[in-house]
Image (cartoon, rainbow, N blue to C red; front, side, top):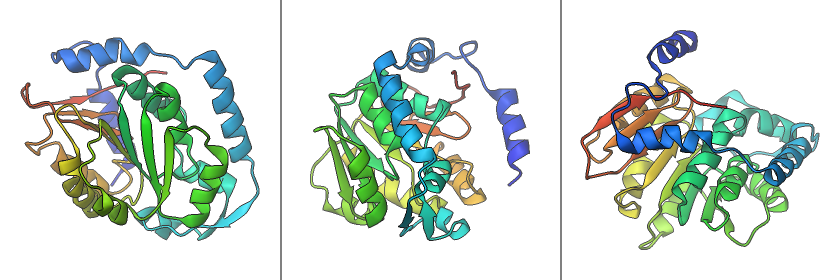
Length: 254
């Protein structure tokens, strides 16, 4: 995959408000994309990031995904932050999604050190977040950094956790791990019974590889997902049976 060509193609087709005919998407882009992180929350995020991006502590990473093939198993916290965290505009998108839609129950597959988890939590602190991390040492690191009674950190593989679910339904699901297209489609198939009409599914790194991009292209065609939004790095799938199937390529806003 030529990532430069993909980005040029994305920039050429991406819209902000003009040409969006779905009220659901238009309202999110107009209102949700203008949500800014509160000043006191910005301080908390900056402190969290500062303690991670220069942290020389080494941990043994047990990684189950395709990303691990390109990385050493023993990494510093700062290396994990640079390679496995949602930050900048993408982390802000997570905050805005959480703040705008106010999900009661969130499932995150792939805690890493918890940057994405923190943004989802701060966006709507009342949300109950179940965040799953397969690596024991990374999980322990996240436990030390993430505090809040509504943040439930679980050390399990994605498969084991999904299979342990009973009748739980999630309003927002964020998948940031494994980075293999076939695995992604399999997890989503398993999770379908834990979604409802209006469930929002956020996928990170949809252009990480040919496999991930192929999976994304297949998923946006599935009849179960009525709305899809492409933000280049992140893709969003929404179940909304009340509307016609539509796909949007959208610009991220700072």
